[in-house]
Image 1 (cartoon, rainbow, N blue to C red):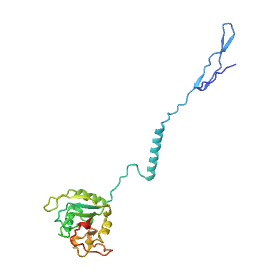
Image 2 (spheres, rainbow, N blue to C red; image 1 turned 90 degrees about the vertical axis):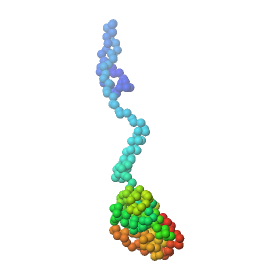
Image 3 (tube, helix red, strand yellow; image 1 turned 60 degrees about the horizontal axis):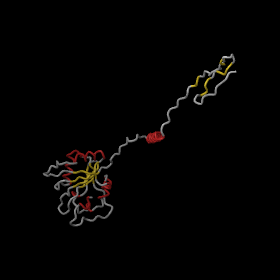
Image 4 (cartoon, rainbow, N blue to C red; image 1 turned 90 degrees about the horizontal axis):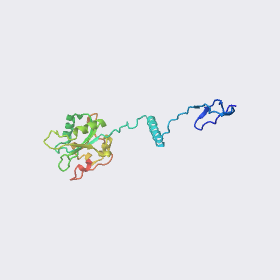
Length: 229
């Protein structure tokens, strides 16, 4: 009868063929010869990635899915500076509000300013050396800062070099400046118009909103530095 050898543990279901009994020298029959079997091919599996690689791939997939859900690409959103109010320092003391405004117009910013304040020393009436300017948009504000930082063409004899920086966060924007100065002593009737803050509507000087509190005149001997910052 045909004999079948047990399958090898390393081979999957080998195909077996009937064996032929071997002939012994005395004419008898011996056992089966080694059957001719063809092993089935092994299935080749891809190597298992390391555990840390799986975690990294999962993290990337999660981040990618989150970005797609939010409609943005990771790292592609750049923060935009929305500030518009600048502080100009090192302004010549002989440059009044009207003189500075004329300079700003001459340098190409006519119609791009909606607030201007040049504090003065009430004891001398001279400009305190700095000013606050609000531009009509963040893009124009960036151009203004680039143009006037280290500016020196004042039109008067001076060695002053302008320094431009952002005003404080609580003084950013037209509305914030209106609220800051409408109830300030610099808006009192005893203060000359040239020494007050000035606002613009469509590039044209406009009346400042009325105060909501009783105004007191600036104290004798004080300077606009008390109200300018």
